[in-house]
Image 1 (cartoon, rainbow, N blue to C red):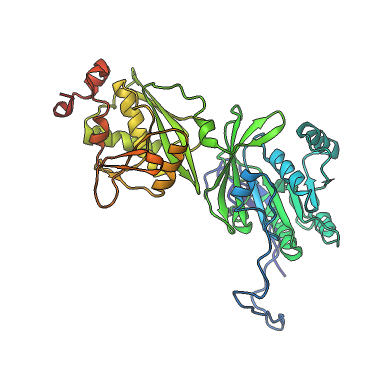
Image 2: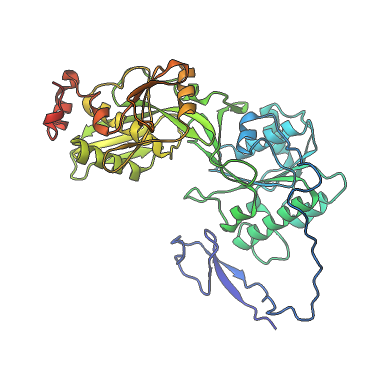
Length: 475
């Protein structure tokens, strides 16, 4: 007979512990262990138990591919790879109040014109959902609403012949299975509830979209295996006091990853942004020092954003480094290369770096744009007008090539930029014309970039910064 008892499971990472402690040994989270019953032991052998023979089929198949369900919201369809695949499971995570429920209600309303859609909420009552639909102007959409938390009842309802083709579950942390003796939101309940919903979606062929709460670290709460169980994982990014929202694909079995969709939060809900580059550069203040336009790639989409930097003499023994929207470790590396290889002294300065618009940039191609912003701030000389910058920096100061060069240049030319500072192309050459006649200035080392900012008008601040490299001053 299986031994009964309890164990303590971390609600952050799902690690099991034989006894309670204040800190999880696996992930380091404090006060995250909760008591749960030990599951029944799995039999060691299968002697005497016969299984059903499974049938193998060919890789190509006889029928055509199932059509995707496009919602008509282009930014959402982009991050899903072109629309929802029948039988797929999508997990949407994000901070509280960032717009997860809003965008999924808009998606359900858009899809309801072509297929049956249901919105099941475990957090709000029916009247509360109707109030939100009225605010968004969606009260006439034929979306079926339900307030339920029992997975057993939900699965039984979805087994009917007239079951919906798209189901939204808000949220997976509120669902529970009565056969498991633990509270909703625990690791066991989240894992089992998601497994039952996904199994039902695969068997019946409907698409299920689940909302997932996030922890204080920004990760979806519950076991990490939850992200492995679903087909697509989407994260909402952005500051709550900022109008822009970024929906980013972290995982997608049916399309590209790292794709983004850009939305703007309004009093009528989330409005898709068709040209995010123009939006991110819309509030640019012209020619000021410390600002540089970076031509980046997010998934398959080119995106132009402004990188801003500010340098100030530090009264502290350890100067401050504040970074918003970029990797702080990457900033430290770029500053070390500028100081060690180019003689630009920044060690005694407070450094503030910001990616305008609330976007988070993780591409190494932003190295050269950050270096240009720092050099511009140190010298007091603006980056030349109408110029974009991109390229990866090595530890010796060399500028390395990046991918999707033509796509970046086409996006810059479309927005009126006439010059690009880029890595050297393979085969040599200093200057060449890109798409639409944009001039490409190819640089191989950071010293070539800094020569743009070494002018007689740079003032005392830049003169002090260049003391370590007197031979490279402007003559």
